[in-house]
Length: 94
Image (tube, rainbow, N blue to C red; front, side, top):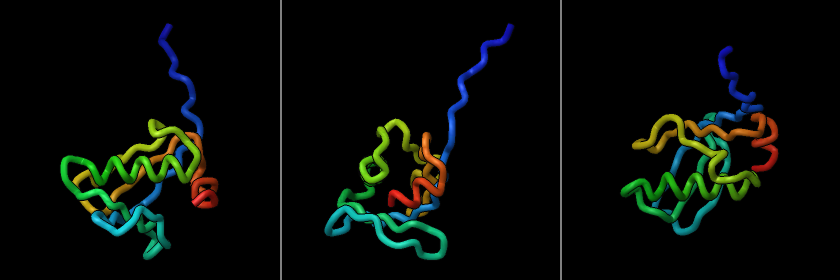
């Protein structure tokens, strides 16, 4: 009998645009369907990506493991998945 994985529940996918080396960490407005996120970390050695994950987890009230960058690791434009929330819930919390 095959082993069945548990249902992961809802998953929110967010299109984001990152502005590294900003003066402060902040989540801005949605421009052209992309959520603008400013982080103070430089785009070196994944530090800006980690700052984005940390900021989103804090603002969405989920664990850091629930937030994952699924596309655009080396780009300013990224797709982020948040497990445990629907897109409507995620946007409401932001």
